[in-house]
Image (cartoon, rainbow, N blue to C red; front, side, top):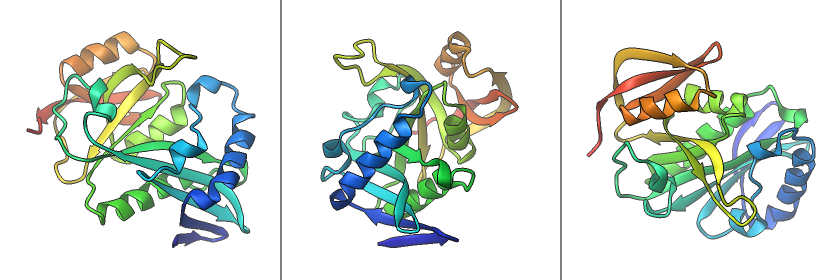
Length: 225
């Protein structure tokens, strides 16, 4: 199903029948990522299970980008890592991987695919979205912050046999139905100042924007019940 066109880029809802071209794109882009720790590769089964939704971006009928999301309950979601915000007990959409080939970069594909997917899923009754981004991936966490998500936790997530300590990630949150509210006081913090960030989050300061190399934190005004 086609969702949007931007010149020669076509955004479509795709499914498991597209899994081969998705994995080929993943391996192609991943081979050129300098810091492999910034991206956790998912399997075909994970991306095409019954509780996921995918958007593919095509240029001249060739897949040049994809984004996928996973639907889950609160207990099995990123909410289990969040200690300083009461997240409602309802279905949550986890915004999983997004990859963009060099041929489509610089055209806002990450933001547009996020917007299209959220609009598509909001129409199906979902309003809580969460995601993770590596603190080393400045372009991605900048895009997430400037699109209206809040940085609500810094944690080691997705531990496995290869990485028993987990992967250090910023955890982001957006509630379309009950957005978080903040007071005016701001703190400007460097993304790798983990100790300060963790202390701010403990005191209900969450990241709300990113400017000139600093994450902007503001104090939570009204916490959701």
